[in-house]
Image (cartoon, rainbow, N blue to C red):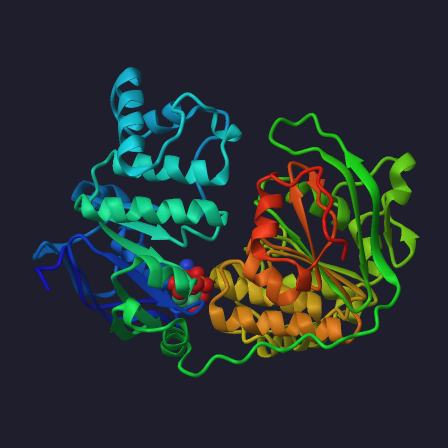
Length: 507
Ligand SMILES: Nc1ncnc2c1ncn2[C@@H]1O[C@H](COP(=O)(O)OP(=O)(O)OP(=O)(O)O)[C@@H](O)[C@H]1O
């Protein structure tokens, strides 16, 4: 290979007892798209933090174009030409694109607008510099983040799971952009759990397992199955088939539910009708920002309806529109919110305390006090059953890697033995092995007669999991589509609103 742009030699980083990166050797070639692959908690984010100067290695050395590299902060990294686009965007919603960029890039406004437009045209990152960020789709926001990074003229661009937030159309566009960037001389480090994407866009892949490099391959020469084996160290389990189950009673029903909002950042819902029965999984497809969070809040009880609409949401045959979340849970409802930190778990609290948030009715309290032994046993059960990689029940939720925290939250809710389970983005950020384990558990629950509602942006996931699918677009829900009679393209048309008003195949 030509002399590397960036080299790491024997780089290690530990957090207390946890060896997040151990003796990492890595060479990133100029003009390459280089994937970093690994299970949840394998150490990918830690490695990126070292390369972007957010953290410093305990031992080992880094070289930039053959010269020793010491990064004491992201500002130093940027001076070398290392840029990073984070998974969670950092744009201010009330400002325009140009104003956001002006916060970090020097230059007169007219000049910045000109540069934003030129870069956009050159790399397929078109976005209106005068648009307010709140009015942009997720794909457009990501383009703004990438443009902002490009305006610092990076030689190395780090993208942390850039496709997890994007609808399929934008993923294809992003890949074209990345190839153009590579051809113009930029190297890209790309973290993703989606093996097919890595095969489509990357020319090199480094695989991490438990903080160690376990492989360096050309991903185009290996199929997704091979890559998965290198990541998890064993073969992938086959998906569990959904058994034919006699459908039972309706456990969640929404009757023509409309909900208006004056908030310009929120979506009003119109005439939402759906029903989930015992023994089935209903999926809600759609690009986020089309009313998913508003619908979730209404179902979970975070948003309570006025009295006249109380009957429009029913759980286990009872009107719940006016009930608080805890009352709904007492009927046998469990919920995994999309946002793990803050909504699904409190980052500063240990896992054992996070168990109590929703599992306290399982006898974890006695006479109003926490039964410590029971709470620990429940938490340890979740950790064991859902293969949560952590030091134990006392670990702070915020110290778990994203995917491991997701496994913990899904596990906690499943262990409540709900009658009705609502999961938003069940495998967001979860690695391929754990994602298939979570899906298997959901299908097993369905086979046992639980009613399950899933919101997901990943069509493949919905096709694997669901019996029926409905698509949410601009606050309206499509008719129910029976999975067996539906193709992904049919769903895709509803996702972009092209099918609105047409009759669909009833499920
Ligand atoms: N600030 C921290 N304090 C304690 N432990 C940490 C910290 N940051 C990371 N870890 C631990 O280091 C290990 C590697 O985590 P890292 O976030 O790098 O994994 P990852 O491969 O990016 O995972 P994911 O795909 O789930 O995001 C994990 O065991 C994690 O719990």
